Image: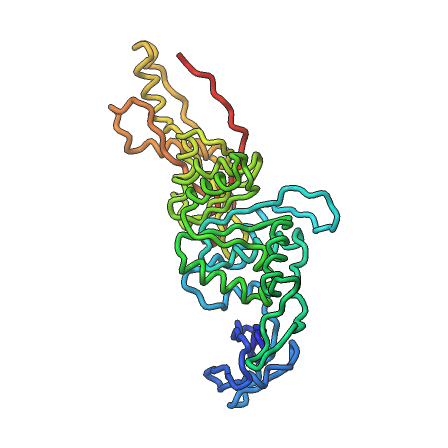
Length: 393
């Protein structure tokens, strides 16, 4: 009881399956091909067959993480398994297995802002799980005394067994080698995601994750206060937020140098907003890559802030002597090798000739030669050292 199984139609190889949490033997799974009693599933092993009341046969499977994420009930759209796997890979997370007696080092800490369904949360926890020691087991239940009303909570050295277990868990949490902090502005989403995480294989990754509710900028500030230091403590930050660019300055203080910042958005222009915010505020991030996530291979995008070439030329013409303005300008070729520059010129269309001041626009286009059916967009930046710029008189 309490296991989650996947039932697939024996004769239909393409059947995505029915996810079932086994509860009481008297419960049943309802399908359009008949019902299956939980009692018929309990005690069976993976790949064995069960039959509905209408004689349709289903094969029992242990659900993979991908199956579980796709088929669990949702209140928000999840990050699907193919995208979640790619995101974790691009974050380049590496942990050492936990070794008893090894020298204590600061844990690897990851922040996910925008918990949502908890799909990426589970994938991140799986990536860091090996860095943490085994969760302490509940102390064996040996009753100290009973009365006529039933057994009381066990007591050991003046401390109840449940309190002792809670104390052991707190000590274990302090010894973790890796932590996934996941935060959502909605307590409803957090509660749902926590239930999803705890439901996967009896919560095997639940202890690797700390759930939080609130605003990411406020959470960062609170962490600095509670830790009594302004030193950075995060190795990776993942922002799945509609207004991610408004938080970039605040999260920079918590991200270690060379740490990875990832922003996931459904629109490429939202990634463009982040690029522009980093440029305008001179934030210590170096753009690594922008990729479009989809069902096939990935496609890299060119996202940057540029001055339209026509605007630059107008400024040069205004500053050049009259005799120089009559000189001709060679026409650029627009072949595949030089086409990027020609398309930059197109960005100048619509710029009024009277506007000679500095003007910048965003370039957002797929890199030449790549083709894919795309989904969301992921921008990846590395945290740089904060460089003090010399003051200008």
